Length: 457
Ligand SMILES: Cc1ncc(COP(=O)(O)O)c(C=O)c1O
Image (cartoon, rainbow, N blue to C red; front, side):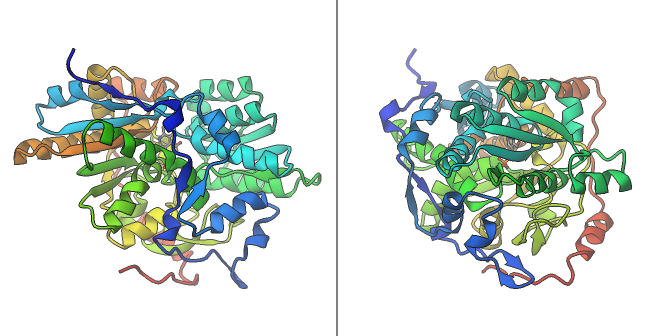
């Protein structure tokens, strides 16, 4: 056995600081009708220690020891070389992936869930609320809250709640309370249900419910938590890319040629790619590809605008690529990629030409996931399949060009709780869906009087 398949880091080699891309890319301020939103305005929603991180433009931020201690249960995650996928494709490309599916909840999401729960606990908060799409984020926060002794309430997008009963059971096992969204528990949920009783729900609606549940709690001990999109979430996830850099060096590789991640709100993609975006800003030649579903094409077909982060317009305006806060994506099985917006830092990097976003249809993605399962052995989450399909395209391109490219991607999660989606694919019940232009235009109409962010370079 001369070849090395997994590159490990010792526990002591875990990165001790997060990278903050906000030091190197300037995003636009959150806006309210009164102008830019000051940090204090977030006080009812997030604990102020996290708000401080959200507004920080410091490049390197120390990771508190208490967080490292919990992360060490599964971190550093191994970097795998996908020899068998390479062989099946007959590509000269070297394919590497960070295996984030090894966390207790099965995805990258605990990296920020643990950090957020820890900061909330430090601030004296007793209960956290959140939304979840695929159920990965909800279960990650439930896990983190269990370890830190906090209560947890999760609003789960209806379509995923019905498709993924085992995710709900994971949350309950960790002691969280999980309800289908829209629910009757909030004004936001009741209003939507009155208008659309059969709605599959959306992340935008679930976010409205979770924020409302936090800010209306009279005890003052509840705060809301978001599993993606915000700067501090992107920052928490950069531990993935920082580990990957060290691991590639151990494998004798100076830099990857291509970095790929699937993108819902942008956090797993950002987590892997931002440390490489830093290198790119400083002159390295790296192609960086966020991959989204063709049915929810924020980066490839939606403009860079100011929009609300949620359907009921509870959040301030955020400068990002957005399909409009009322956009309800079709119920594709990659539930975690059904968000109307994209992280401000990812959006800004796209407008500045630092990334080349790609949209793919779900059948191609499932086909890719199944090839991965048959070669590398792990069944990927449907979200992760989007990254794998893009990796396969790049590996095939490298074959045509006869180039030995290094391709690095984030294996954001396993699909063991997502087998209903595989069942539908394998029994021929899934189809591709091309989002009609008029639906995008109709949803964007609502934003026409909002302020416009300055466009990038
Ligand atoms: C496995 C997996 N990958 C990717 C995503 C997309 O989210 P984000 O873009 O925040 O990483 C999700 C979201 O739930 C997920 O569960």
